[in-house]
Length: 445
Ligand code: BGC
Image 1 (cartoon, rainbow, N blue to C red):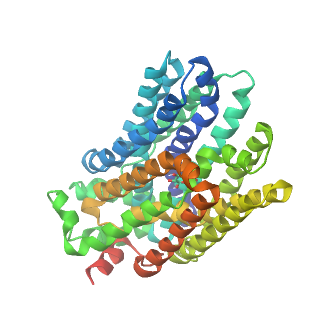
Image 2 (cartoon, helix red, strand yellow):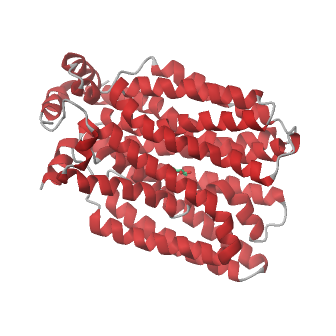
């Protein structure tokens, strides 16, 4: 086997292990939609209690993301991944054993903390392990894992639905936790983190393992990070040359949520029923189709992101999402079979355009625009902004529909897509194929 192939093999292996964090993220955020139906019956939950159970995970994630950055900078990326597994385990344990509403809330909160931390720690780990020319695709593996986790949750819910076995739905999470736990023992800490914590020899050793002949060059690249602060300070984030990457990271993170993707991921069956799919069965099938389209197009994005680049994907994706949302609104203006069919097509198109643009690109960008010394915490803040806006969208979606109607709501998201387009064209630079060092030099200009 050639050196190049061997290197690619190990690199892919560590990426897959880290991306299992994405699998847990997707699974845990989506499994509730299936379980809730039965929980509500068993515990006689009110609608408000149901809403609380759904949204508490997002609240937990919001705090997890904020803490995750500091933790990842302090204890290292790999130990942070271990920590998330510990939290996932406790969360799943409490949920699968829950005997009432409060236990469910606690389980969702702890799972949420884990989701929040892993949503930044997994792409961070992968970005720091990846060579510049494949970084986009490798980080997008995590997005692929998120979409697979969502699809898995849809299928697991469907499988256990006939017996109403909601405890088994949650407990499926143990398998994913166990698999990543074993895998993590075989992956190293990232060279970037080791380097910034004065463990240069270990960093060199890891680089040789993952880069072979190119290790020297990469060590030199790491060494050129003169701006690695010895004392990690929040004030670093306020430096003049940090403002632009800071704004861009937060901007794309927020855009990912406020363009409405999770109204579809969390409420697809409701949307399909409103569009005229009269049985729960057909609405659920259409939802599974959403999950499949999401996975399939994300695979295409892995191929495109380091070839076409981040910016063209964002531009094309945002235009496509906006137009699909306009079409979705038009479908809701009509009625009957044709309207139902148009809404189905428009929704799948919308998900497809998201999956090839904002889905993977947002996580890739926020993992690569910040300098080494503050990367963890800066990413934590951007991820926090992602979850906070996600929380607001999830909380306001149903009220928006009540106040403005379905058409007005989707057209509002379309308008936000156009605003996002302006933001991307104006501010986001192309980072395809650039080393971390080249990206930092760009900000200094
Ligand atoms: C987003 C999630 C979303 C998922 C859908 C992720 O990148 O962060 O909020 O549910 O994509 O595939």
